[in-house]
Image (cartoon, rainbow, N blue to C red; front, side, top):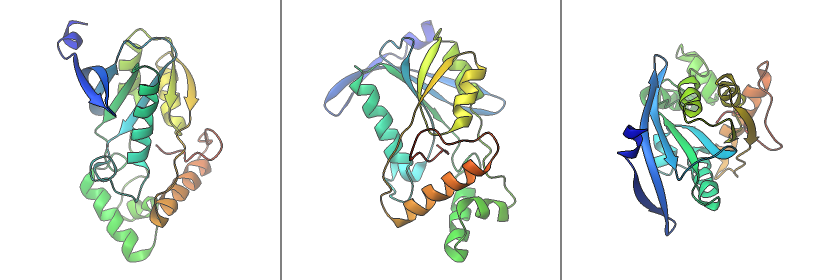
Length: 207
């Protein structure tokens, strides 16, 4: 696509060059960007990642968002720099940074997990959607991908877009006790929902 080629450039990560192209993805449910590394082919690695300012940028040790993003990029580089990363503007499970911060405040004050904190604020557990990313991925002409995720919802969205999906779990170690509690809450809440079975042993199926 001409628009994609106009964004082609190099970046260096871990001392190695990556070729990347960038395009916006959006629909009525959300917005984000697709970063295409190298020349992806069928079976390439794909990560659909929701923005987490604390984990991705500020290197917070209280969640697994930053480590999962870093692991996904490491895996793409290990495969010769071929893969796709979606970075979606869905902070705080789709509720935004301010609601996320309010939820964290309630959690510190009362000891409840982030899911109960969101409910106390009148918000659903998770408002995120992935169809806009999935259909952008399908538009690349791919027929199959290896999706780096522990979240069944992402797998289902990509399958709805017509691609065959092999889930590649991203299993990270909690960096402190707060992260361990956060990851345990995600695993417990997700496995309690119909149709949200965990993907892979030791996974935390919410990212």
